[in-house]
Length: 320
Ligand code: CP
Image (cartoon, rainbow, N blue to C red; front, side, top):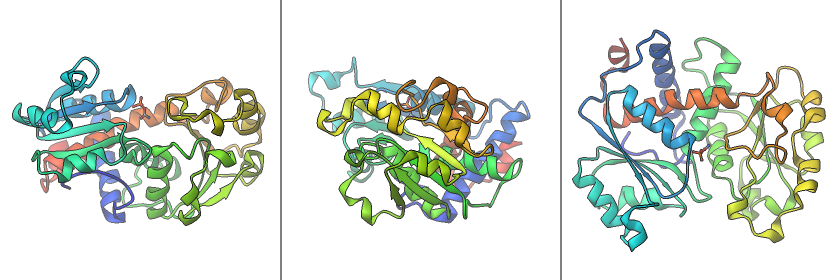
């Protein structure tokens, strides 16, 4: 794998390979092999132009558990505030020896620009770009669903027939887009539920059912109900119902949680707006996989960095 920029162009075999290697990584961690030598001598740069808790820390943990060196760059407090360009910033980091650049940016397409510009030779991983994609979030979500569906050893298996309902601010959500493409590739059935003002115009060309009624979607008994964060920072006020109306109509509360089949899981990529798209009852319930998703994210990001930087080497050998 040279770069990981999206899930729309990620093939089934490549996606399954990442999920399978992630399972190897998780197994190694469970055997108390906290640190693997696979990426010794490699340098991973976290290049973040937007805020992050989970993704940045998860990539840092993943790189360190593979024995790579990590440089954390945050645009805030850097020379970006003095007007330094993306090209100069990236080339400065490359000059410090970056082998991989994990990039989050507010502009859709920025990681692709970096990967294809010729400015740097490092592999590029998209850690979330504008409203476009967040591929490692979708991979960790699919990993979580696969584990819940198949248990201990789910290697080689896809999500054929698995029914996923994604609820909320689809318009601004890179998580929804990356999940939609990946889940479709893996054979899952996706339903999107949203206020009519928070659904993109081109949604009719997406491989998903579209709905506007959360209670109807819950009555359909999805295997996974994924609640999305309302992205206030990207929101045009005209698109958004009042918070009270939103939580009453599209929020997952205790009553809706009780109406879900008992074996349905409740997912959220985080960070959560508790009391808006998800109530504390639902977020902290036994059916919530929120923290499981975070933990799985480290294994998935280890797999991505490993496949990017260690190439064709045998990961099972490395995991021993
Ligand atoms: N899910 C996610 O991307 O969270 P962060 O913004 O905290 O990285």
